[in-house]
Length: 362
Image 1 (cartoon, rainbow, N blue to C red):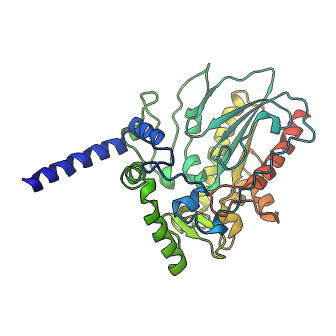
Image 2 (cartoon, rainbow, N blue to C red; image 1 turned 180 degrees about the vertical axis):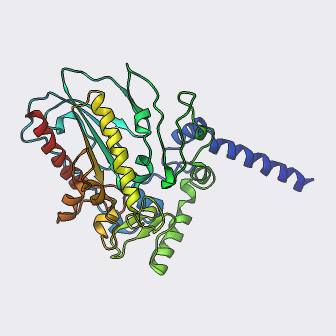
Image 3 (cartoon, one colour; image 1 turned 135 degrees about the vertical axis):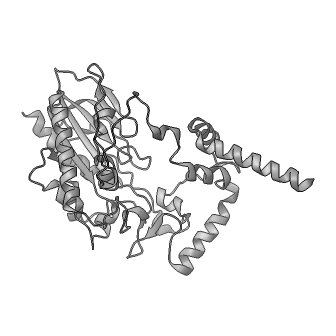
């Protein structure tokens, strides 16, 4: 009787945990309630996303003091006649570096950040010079811009119409069209973070963390490796996200790049450029942020960024982060994080402001 009751209990508990881990609303509620340092709280990730992912907080080289030098305001602010729309990712808002506002951009009177995960309905002010800056980290470049979903996600709020976005995910020849029902996609039925959510609900509790940290220390000091989806750089001074150094993952700095891949990306960027120019933007810029492995471990790099940026058919104007980062003698990335430090962000900001000052003079 006890075994039967126990089995029913565990089956029911498992189904409840599975449902909670699949429900977006439930997971938001749970994570909000557990975002604390109590025994039932979740691991707080205080020392960089990669350091925290592999529980190597005890290794000082991977969690040095964060560079928090304040971002400089432009020496020449220029007439503030630009409305800047920045379509970007976590490099623009990661919590360990300063967030951006209009005061750090030259000539910008209005600044709008477009989170790639949420998109935006915009309406341009024709009295301003409207600039669209597309920032994308290298590891997301092929996955996101293999299709044209940006055209569905960043739309004029007055002339609102769904486009049919051609997607060639994983660079095959399968054609996938955007949803017939506005706002609905088959992927909405599933939660792509199910494994991560299950780990959070089953194991990610502060009182369990010493076990994970002990295992991580054993792996590091005895076997010289990191845990999970994190790998240690060849010089032992950096942590890299495994997908950025894999020989098979599309976000890797070392995976083979075919000429057709570059052609497809350039063609998509040209479609995107023409679309937004026709919709009223004065100019569209592209800024690709290199993987930390691309800069810190360049041997074997597949040259994805320079192949795109130097393609003679590319219409978009480029803000060349790769070349400037490659030549820099200052550490621009955090050793235990996928993101740059404030020196990296400041260098990027200086490059952006050079272009914006040129726009204000036209």
